[in-house]
Amino acid sequence: MAIFGGNSRKVLDTVHPDLVKIHERVISKYNFDHSVYEGIRTDEKQLEYFLGGKSKLDPRDPDLRKSAKHLKQPDGFSHATDSAPYPIDWGNGKDKKAEKARARFYMFAGYMFAACAELLSEGKITHTIRWGGDWNSDKNFNDQTFDDLPHFELRKI
Image (cartoon, rainbow, N blue to C red):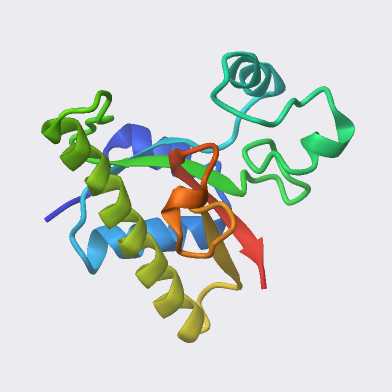
């Protein structure tokens, strides 16, 4: 039985309850083990990621800042998580092993979307999610210019 470790639990304490419920459903119903390694992010960390090319959102730009879901939102929570299938293997490289490691992120995203749909239909959450592997949510993964496979964020309905 998959369970969250202490670090994932601490991160989830910083995240909007809808995202927490989705992650918990993936663990409890699907027994799909994963780590949640980032929720709320400081301005400094967001800037570090932006300058390092890991984010497209510069927290110094007021217009882009509004889109940065990892930053503390008005409700006090992060509206985004960075999560990875456990054990974590980023799948860097071009070989067959790397391809299979990356495929686990796509499988994980499927569980996240299934859990979200279930919880939404049960009236237990009020948001859908957007995934960093399909930013425009068109289910075409080949049209992405910036893959962020660990990233999930809330979307208003």
